[in-house]
Picture (cartoon, rainbow, N blue to C red):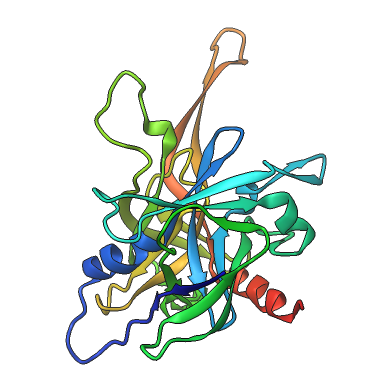
Length: 287
């Protein structure tokens, strides 16, 4: 079935574009809650190019690795998103058969880096108003009315364009924050967390942000705003994992470790978006 998909491309005019407005109007509608049919959840972001619409997330959100062997986390996943108002509006949902997507090579992953893409639709043309026309893949089923929003590749910032000290924002669905007896927030709606680019490893190709992440944030998008130009905002990658702070307590008498305390250090590892772009290039060659 043919659908219409709006990927918004921002043109930076001479006037200042509010980074906050871009976050609310474009990036939040493109952020997805991934719910597994067997339970559990993760986050992701929809990115579009001229050929396909993809869900970009962390590799471990779709694939388990045991003894260097990969297997799917689940056979089915629900992709929940908000087109209009993520903080008060109604959500829409896509159902994806991950087993089918894996067989048809709609699900591709980086063998080294913790990132993967899931092709959910093929772009077939444009309307007279410039909106993209697309067909969902055989493994994707639309369960509600509105098609998802998404982030254009034009709004992605490569590793070389990210500077240490830039502001950053993580958007996602941190399910581990939920306490069943307290109903302060609907955790099927996104939460934002702001921080800064703390470091870049040019050898390993990783980004470290001074911004905590939690279970459920995995695969969620990370956006950066330049410290030199506040209108320069873009998607820089996805959350891979939080960095743990390890504290060992030793016995002064026995000279051995008696306990180990683990805590969230407040730092998060981000996989740069260009690893996803490389997978998109591979997908475009598959017939």
